[in-house]
Image 1 (cartoon, rainbow, N blue to C red):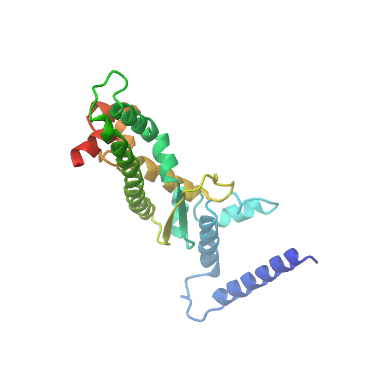
Image 2: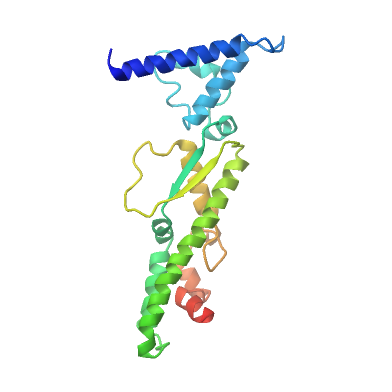
Length: 231
């Protein structure tokens, strides 16, 4: 027996002991059978795995599926006992929503390009560009804080009572397959679309498919305008 199979066998042994302890508790209500407990336990396991896919594979799939109280990701959410772990890259996420394009346009505006008038004396442009970089960093921090609150709110609205842990990613490494489960992906996607964007207070969904960079320019909320108004 390999160390891996031995470890799995040990885990199974502990699981059997734990289930046996639940089944033999003396304080169980007379009308409550162990099958009810077993269904709840298996449903929580499925919820912790982020879905039923891993629970209903193999030769006994049909039997196990019949024991689960729920099957959809949203319906399983209240049964989850493991933390919901959310990982997001603010710079990349904002960039995908139009922030890179918006800031590039502001840099061109400070340089007096694209037919725009020169907004600042040439000797002041360098300092303004550095201020623009600082504003971008502030935007990312503000958005991440708002995203964290939104992700927690969305998880709670789905009935999740387990902890919600939101982690900021600043590296260039992509999420590996299996690093997030279906529930975590669902919460992440909804939170990204619902989190207010810095400077506008509007969520990505509020733009209803209209390009964010274009909308912000038309509204007079470009980053360099926010920066100069602050100064």
